[in-house]
Amino acid sequence: MKQNKTFIWSLVIMIVVASLYRVIPNRPFGFAPQLALALFSGAVFKDKKYAFLLPLISMFISDLIYQVLYMAGVTPIYGFYQGMVFNYILCASVTVFGLLMKRLRVMNILAASLAAPTYFFIVSNFFTWLGVGFFVEYPKTWEGLMECYVAGIPFYKNSLMATMVFSAVLFGSWYLINRKAAKPITI
Image 1 (cartoon, rainbow, N blue to C red):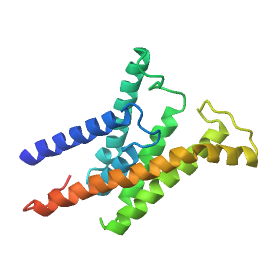
Image 2 (image 1 turned 30 degrees about the horizontal axis):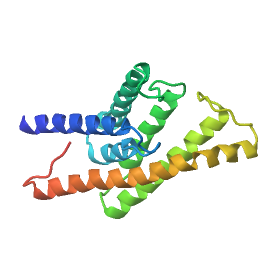
Image 3 (image 1 turned 120 degrees about the vertical axis):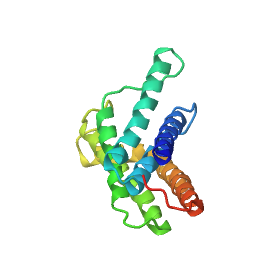
């Protein structure tokens, strides 16, 4: 029973911290822990429903906070936006990168931490270019597609750095906790 309580509190803390971090004022756009959280949960959680839900709940809570702050006139960033469903689907799909990690080795985590934001960048910008659920309009030409990708590079750089940093924190903490535990923790 104690391990279940620890598991639940661990989930709550991860969700709250990731949600609150995402709404920190003046945080560089794209520098958020949700992709790292998706990788981590996919790699570590035995129950895959939690693996997919954890980053989505975190995103939803932060979007809800953004929306409340926007409605109160505190921030120009709104929480609920056209195309958010696509971002949620993409974020959840990043969990698969974690599921594909058979062994939690530094090189595997590093590779997934590079691949996940790259995948997110390529797919999300492609959907943006297509105009699927997003506000930004780009010409439906090769030049328009390239313009869309170029416009997304600052977000990609921040996402790449954030995923590397937060993956190091999450997986590193997990390693240290399990190293000190008499019996490895399974969630």
